[in-house]
Image 1 (cartoon, rainbow, N blue to C red):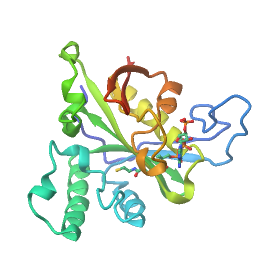
Image 2 (cartoon, rainbow, N blue to C red):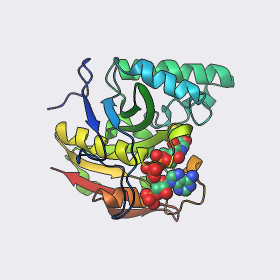
Image 3 (cartoon, rainbow, N blue to C red):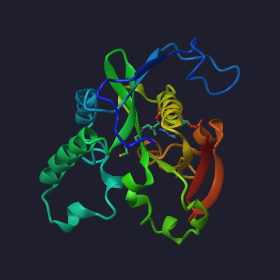
Length: 231
Ligand SMILES: CC(C)(COP(=O)(O)OP(=O)(O)OC[C@H]1O[C@@H](n2cnc3c(N)ncnc32)[C@H](O)[C@@H]1OP(=O)(O)O)[C@@H](O)C(=O)NCCC(=O)NCCS
C-alpha cells in the first residue's frame, strides 16, 4: 500500500500534442497548442522549482503557499500573526510537508520552469474540506473504508494561462493517483466562472467532465462535489 511518500528520485514524463498521452487540446477541431510540457511530482527534488514558481506570485493568493487545505481550521489568524510572518510560516510549513511526503502535487514544466501545479492528496492530508460549511452536511457514510483522494488547488503562471496547462496538470494528477493504487477522487469546482481566474483554483466543471468525473452532490448553490473512481 502506498505510504504517502514519494521517492526522492523525480518521476517525470513528457507530454506533447503529438504524444497522445496528455493533450492540451480540449475540443475536436481546435488547433492544438504547440507547447511540450513535462510533468513531475512535487518532492524534495522539485521543491526549488515550486518555490521559485510560487515566489514569483508572492506565495499565491496572498501568501497561502498552498497550505490552506492542510489545516482543519484557520490557524494563522487564531495565532494572531502579522501578515508577513504568516506568509513566511506558510512557505516554511509547505516545505516541511513536502519533505515529509505529506503534501503532494503535480508540477507542469515548460522547459526547466515550473508553470503549473495541481495539489492533490489523501483525505487525511487535506482536512479543511471536511469542515466546509456545505461538505460537512453531506452524508458520505458509504465512503467508509474506501481510499479517498482530493484535488484542491490548481495554479498556473500568469504568463502561461489559457493554454491548457491546468488540463495537463489534471491528467497527470489522475495518472499519478492511478499509479498509487487509485480510489475515489473528488473535486469541488464552482458551477460558474464568474469570478474569473482568481476564483477557479478548484478547476472548472468541464475540466472534470472531460476526465470522466460525475456530479456527486451539490455543495451549496455555487459548487459541486464531483467524483471519479480510479481502479
Ligand atoms: C484557473 C487557472 C488554474 C486556469 O489555468 P489555465 O491553464 O489557464 O486553464 P486551462 O487553459 O487549462 O482552461 C481550463 C478552464 O479554465 C477556464 N479559464 C481559464 N482562465 C479563465 C478565466 N480567466 N476566466 C474564466 N475561465 C477561465 C477555461 O475557459 C477552461 O474552461 P473549461 O474547462 O470550461 O473549458 C489559472 O487561471 C490560475 O492559476 N488562476 C489562479 C488560481 C489560484 O489562485 N490558485 C491558487 C489557489 S491556492
